[in-house]
Length: 319
Image (cartoon, rainbow, N blue to C red; front, side, top):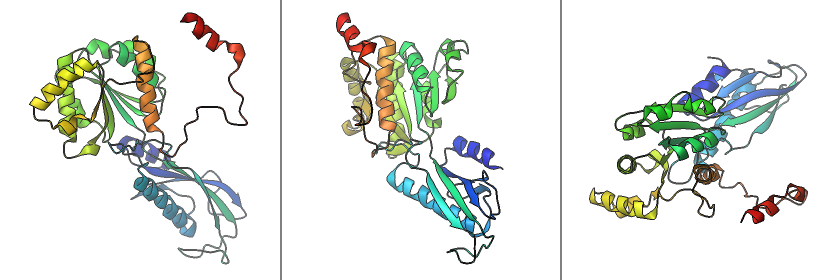
């Protein structure tokens, strides 16, 4: 398998990796600039030149993978807060000399030149499952599809997942998986990628309750099997669900796993698009690395908003 096929394989199997590219060459080197190799924790594909050069690259790539795994940014996204974000680790440049006078760890390689390698982490992207492709689910899918993630769309009504209705996702950045399940959509939960974030928003409250029950049973004893679990609806709906779930044997502490209502409470409006924006914003915020600063105001060298746009005036006039 070449490096391009390896990238597809890692994405398909949700396995973290590192893409190593020969970014620059001075003098003689075994490979030209542009040569690539993919490294996972247990395998490599392609080559950047063999010998000490390649061994050093593999060693550094696997150290990066180990560090990302230890810090929770390698791709699994469970209840502990790691999100599987593809931006968890930063690319690195690595310079390796190819002479008998250069330092080496895995044997002398005396081609005579110097190689600069670019190491780019390939963390697992987040996975999101939307159960219920009604008005809010459809709007939410449109937003989430513009982001690098695995998007699973589930509905027990086949017409909600028709090619015509989902044609708005034809140019999606996300990898979209469609699950038409006319009976027992909760069975889809067991086949979702580990760490998937689940949003329950079907047309049927009985279906919503069954999905919450199945999700909580799935994470019982394995909290990281799923990521966040969100339920659309009111506090009254959740009060009824909570009583039902307690009666079915779920401990009270386990029910804290369910977030309801979902979205941003400060974002007023009950139309589907507004609700979807709030839900998407909450999810995307959770995908950001924990050490990434949140920017609320322009930096010292950045211009503020252009007052000529009149956003504030138009909003005030509409109130």
